[in-house]
Image 1 (tube, rainbow, N blue to C red):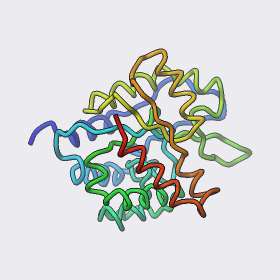
Image 2: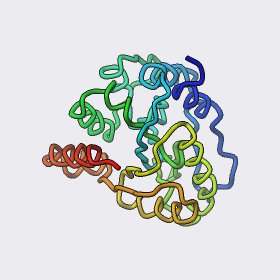
Image 3: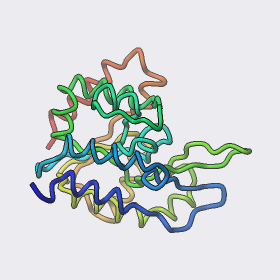
Image 4: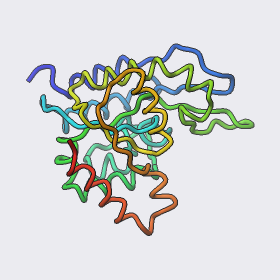
Length: 230
């Protein structure tokens, strides 16, 4: 089968570049440029789970973390889950990412990776990792952490969301992870008119880090939202 969903995602990821402006103290990391194995395992993942032409529902994160998609090239997937669940081993890196723990517990409850990824595509309006310098260290940053940063990235994010949609996504309803993320996606949607309905879910990092005792309730919220999708 030619030009599958997998082929389109792989082409999209390989062509990712951000050459626009950034405020002082911010930088963008492209995992597909930084580590050749990231491209290899990313291709293996999409060929395994997306090698068809089925339309999928869209789940929107914020932007990749350095320990999740910033290493594996797969959203909300650290090397532990990539190997243990997706059966793809990464030799050059070993990472643990908090959000990945919740997402894969939820995916298991949904019916497993094959079933979940057959129905959903996850990515971000800004699909590269953002870091911010604090003292002498570089820390993870979100695209909305700085007003100037968001303004500089906004047009790029709109174009990126359009490219995501063109992969083969359903736009009648979109699922947004994180309440603050939803505020900015809503602003973008008013300008670009990309999605008819936006359903907001608490972000996996927030749940795993601060609401772990209530994890099952949050997993059920995700599953109920997905089952009642437009």
